[in-house]
Image (tube, rainbow, N blue to C red; front, side, top):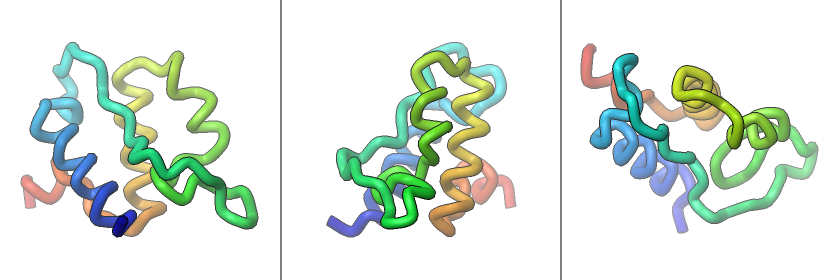
Length: 88
């Protein structure tokens, strides 16, 4: 599995669902791609690029917080944010 590609596809899925829109009233989909292991320095998950704090917070996070986590993890992964890329 090519992790960056899988994560980019997951982000594209969330964008297609409308999950990155500020007025989205559904549940923002998790970035988990079922590659659940921490980096050697334990800074983040190798699959979804979330930190331990972000992983812990996800379950109780509201849509705005989940979108903010997505922004951070995509930056950490070096991937473009699909909603921002669509707007130039």
